[in-house]
Amino acid sequence: MEGNDELDRRIDDALARYAGVEPLAGLEERVMRRVRMASRRRVLGWAAAIAVAASVVVTVSVVRVPRVVTPTYRVGVPAVMRPAPVVEKARVVTMRRARTRARRARPLPKLEQFPTPTPLTAEERALIAFVGRYPKEAQQAFEDLRKRSEEPIEIQPIQIPPLEDSGAQ
Image (cartoon, rainbow, N blue to C red; front, side, top):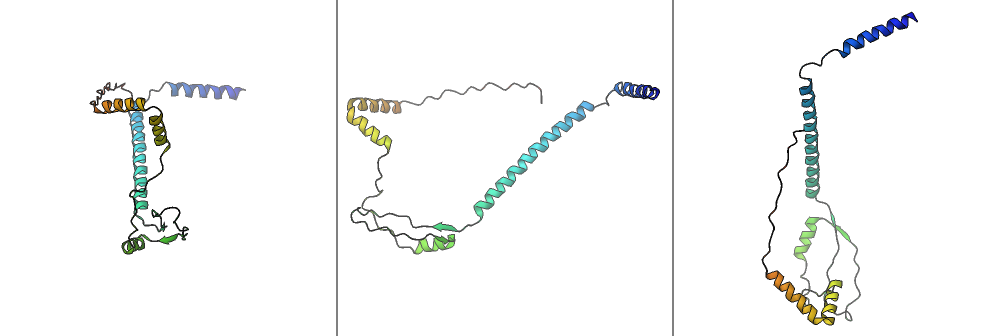
């Protein structure tokens, strides 16, 4: 066990000398510089990723892709006289052909009423029911709404407290 004591003594001496050494001058400054450079690299990495994504979006929007064109127009013919719908197959047409065909296409037939009336929404039906059941309250509500719409709009000033700099980066 004599060899173990000698080995332990040498290790203890080496550790005592190692622990007693002061760090080199400017160590803190070098560490902070590396931290700042790492954050800059991260920002540059994000900027490069955003630039690549933007170029992909621009490239995709510029490249012409064949589109499926299906005829979609309705003629205002009464339902009783309306013929059975003709089902056409969808065709793949390039944009150049579609523009050429659109120029040569016959004009659509004129509708009796334009725009074509659409069914009432649930909100519109509820409003009609409210006015039908409570005409005085509805009139009062519309008068209040008209008065409020004539009042000037007041916007409160925005108050943003100044940011506090904690000094830590």
